[in-house]
Length: 298
Image (cartoon, rainbow, N blue to C red; front, side, top):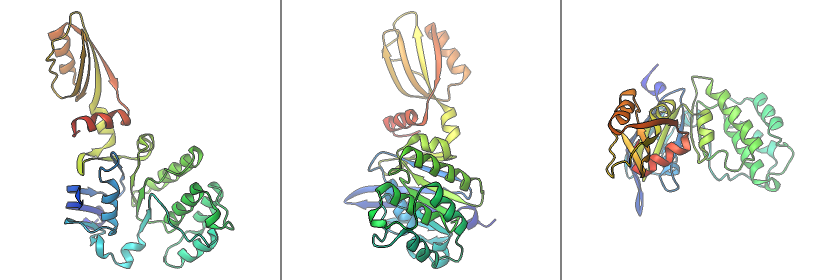
């Protein structure tokens, strides 16, 4: 496998400002076969990073590379290998769904008509309906079908489930998992719905103020971050230091400590030094995200 095939999307020291810095020296590689989720508060730079990846925004510094090509000058071949669904879709309102699908199919050398028919049925999108009269959610389903129909090697989704009802979102995530089973294909998506990320992503990038606060395996992050419930026999000291602590809250003889790498040695140290009972709690992704935002790094 060549370097390009091994990594279809790369960002190299990329910076972008719109009056204020939005992305600041972002370096990131997205390996083939990964399902990478972008997570961050509004304004953290997620959509701008995606726009730079697609060549829709010109970086002020650095560059984005897709299939080894500069994203601002992608060849027709590279574009044919890409699928994209923006946060806000803009489709030809005067067309019917089937007409738009047929029109779009003509631009791609590979088009899976069976997949289109299957998704139209499962997602209850009628080919004869005029797009302008569809609900926002149905239009978004159609946009996703358009992005999936040519079976892209790289699929980029910006808030793909934001307009979908719970049932449609469940069907969409099932489709994403099916795509992810093909190790030759890569998915990048941005979402505020942490439960969706936990279900489908194997890698996570957390953006904070235009910088990468975490880039790595999702399971590794969840395994490493814990919350300690400390209960001592006497009031704890005002300065209660725990190695690896991200955030500490103390009230009398009790403390809540969010910590990286809660080893057995660390737990034994807390118990011995403070005569305390220590209970270890797992954190879900939403809780971890809030902790990362608090300190600015994971």
